[in-house]
Length: 108
Image (tube, rainbow, N blue to C red):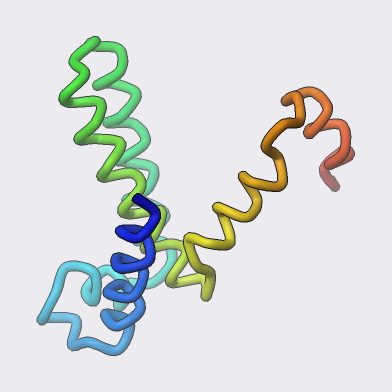
């Protein structure tokens, strides 16, 4: 299934140079990082509300929206889904507590 992430990432990358009136993503890119971050916040909130409702179909729908906008953020930042997948692979097999301890304390 990671092929779909690769395919979607390629489309999102192409949208960076598209006319902002030609696609939703091109328009979002043209508004800048704050607009992308706002969409991620909105989608995360909608996912929380869907999860609280217990509607599995809505949870899947809202998760897809959140993932999509997160992929937009990655592309805007010059990153790829594989960067995230490699990080998840690095963490696989570590306990959450062990992984957090290896990260150390965040800066001020």
